[in-house]
Image 1 (tube, rainbow, N blue to C red):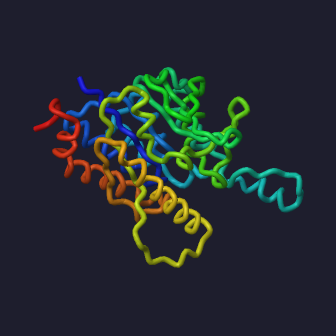
Image 2: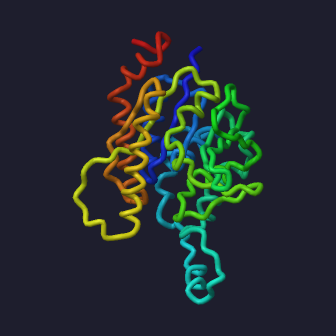
Image 3: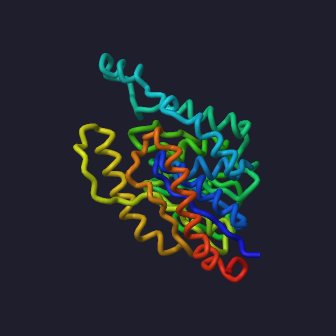
Amino acid sequence: MTKVGIALGGGGVVGCAHLGALQALKESGIEIHSIAGTSSGAVVAALYGYGYSPEQLIELIPSLSKRFLDFDYWNFFKRLLIRDVKVRGLIKGRKLHHFVSRLTHDCGMSELKLPVALLSADLMQGRQMILSSRPLVTPCQGAEMITNMSVADAVLASVSIPALFKPVIHQGRFLVDGGIIDNCPIAAVKALGADKVIAVNLVCVEPVKTSFDSLLSIVSRAVSMNLASQAKQLMTKADIILQPEASAIGILDFSKITDCVTSGYEYTRRRINEIKDALGNEYAL
């Protein structure tokens, strides 16, 4: 049987489109053998790999809101008064960590039901880190693997956008968002043993009309431009690329979560015959 892997790219709140895509694939009888995720894609990959169905994850959507953005106001205030106070990020990440830990019962990566790889980057070594639930079937060039992390720690390490989130410190490594090296982990899911790879890329930079009147809007746009350029090179390695129309939604615009899910579902449904053809005779109509 063809082992179908899926690579879920990062994109902030837009990552909820992954849930719609997974639901459409499930309804069409496409079984996922392995899954890899970067940044917001890592949240979905981890929970799906734990055993949650797309429908169950979609039901959790209403619980996601800006309350998970636990800004470190106290340390910033102290930094204004005491020069020696160190501030490594705007957001502590404790609330997101608790959310994932509670849903996965604080399990380790090796306890996940599916082969799962979450991507992070080590600031100390300047290299990609694959936070994996299984030994890799084939090596992933230039990357180092870690298996002895909790799922919650691994997810936080993958979503920790530099300057926004504090890095996750693990065994002397300073781990941040894997998207700075690879925002759509196609190579990682292949290394887990996938024969065919579906890549869901959520970063597409179209011309916009905005005043860019906040630091967050400027940083978000700059990051998206860099990731979109990176994606053009990486996407050639997937068997089929899905790119739901959700690029105009801000990375932290929680009010559009339901729209993202719907976009991912409807887009994937429209392309389901094409997807099955790409996966080979086993799925071809």
